[in-house]
Length: 305
Image (cartoon, rainbow, N blue to C red; front, side):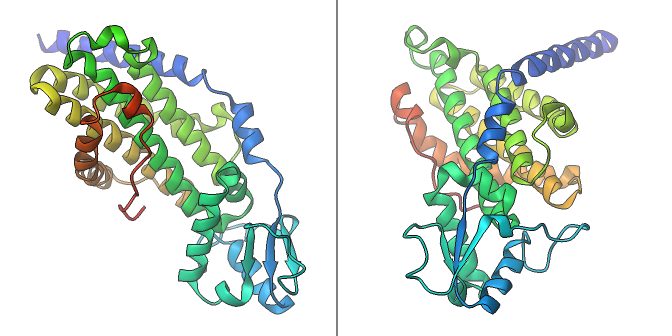
């Protein structure tokens, strides 16, 4: 019996891997590359000395941290202006005299720019390392919330009578969709960290999705059959959030440091994300109507990403 069970598990893993490989082909590397290579100019207002200090800081992901090859040359993306009157009247501007000497103020300004210029997030992070923590946080949080909504909507037919006939067909095939979203998330994170936007080159980072993502979704499917009513929907949604978040966070750490996190640390990330998601998923699941759930904006991420 043990041998049969092992063969069944292996067959399930192979089947899951094949579905994963099929699903990751459905998004466009070219679109991500185009988004990551968008042209922009970040204006810096201040004296030449202040501007040089800020440019050096912006070329590092965090204060004092740089790659073995040294900080990249970000000046092609920078415009320096001696006073505010010379600078373009846009929000893509930093005042060197205000932020160059304060990590807190700089982080707040970078976060503001990332929120305002959603269409430039990937390009900002790819070209200017200081934007990477904020952009990575948005990527992981947004995809985790999207996968949560998909998991909830796809679970509704098992809880709400006749709901299955009302849902779009894509919502019912959630496994492939959630996996696709995770794979695209990892490729976007790689793009944000300046790595080649190439699925084959990134496959080493994407393969862990097979084990983790299919594992927690299998658990989530079982939950619907074991846990009564709406509780099962909530648990499945929280599992979707935690599974996506922990994979994204682990990938961010890898891209940022080159280090793979340990299994205990990955489990801790998952557990923390699951607890974080539960109360938020309960509120989301109460909305009931699939169209209301799908359009719900993500909650503030206070997990300290």
